[in-house]
Length: 405
Ligand SMILES: *Cc1c(COP(=O)(O)O)cnc(C)c1O
Image (cartoon, rainbow, N blue to C red):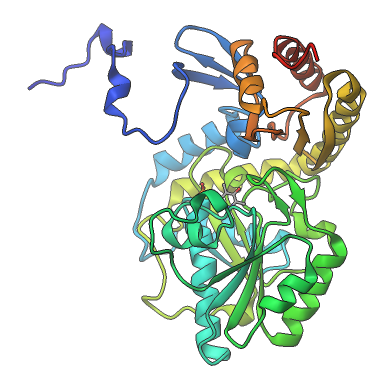
């Protein structure tokens, strides 16, 4: 069999999607190109992306900073080996410890991998300092990833029976309910792990007093506070990290999504007193991989240079204000969010239908559950982009069966 490339290389044979293992209902669209706030499919149709590649493309699609970092680093070194330091790894780790309250960074490729590292570190800590305590308290309606342990940590009722048996050692308690959390703490607890703004769960915000009290309880019991900032980190909430809004320092923080601007990259950060892994305990072939390190460093430096955290706060306020103006005519309620992680409720369970109609009109939005629409555009979004999005949303809303009511 020969693999010669010819003029037809650009064509995709009919039915090629049958070769992709089914895991999700995907629309009959093939994405081909991206730039800034926009994506283009193979038919040339344009889409305004208010899902931001699922809260990932923090600098917009195919930003030149990421292209340049990839070009330069790929010419120098694509991969050395997990057994050596490399230059961008050291530079990027230093940058992250400089801009956070943490001293140590472990790198991975996906958010779930960073959370696995956090879970392992908490269990290592429990084994070393808390007589083998291994339970981790997490929140109902949370999302922590799709490996077996992170699915077990996740508080999603739809997953309850899936892939049994689950990894033991996770207790789920409702958000902002201190009594429930205190009732769950016992001699076997080693950590509390939570998102400060629940993203996949529909944008639910942890109260300041709740988090501050959890911090104190963790100190009293000697257990770890783990902030999953995979969705909220790197400017998304209007501060560089969501924990900065709370006046609370977690013991462990995980980052993913926006940190790579689209390149697969994640990180787990902790303080020096929790630097507990011994050789062989933790690692991975691509942990600290040079290309990912160079891209992550360029993305984070760009967010800092352009003050995109501040920009996210300003544009998030503009978005919230415009949504409030439309709330009466579109029947929106419970408009909520932090920075550019925003959501609102619909007055009927038509989220999927509304998202599909928007897609048809060239707008990508996300409906995490039937009554909820979530928006998480690139941090570079402008007021004009927000106005464009709302115009399409209004048009799509008019076509809904509920609109007449
Ligand atoms: C997306 C997400 C994850 C999982 O990240 P992956 O890169 O999909 O493994 C974990 N936690 C939160 C809060 C997320 O939003």
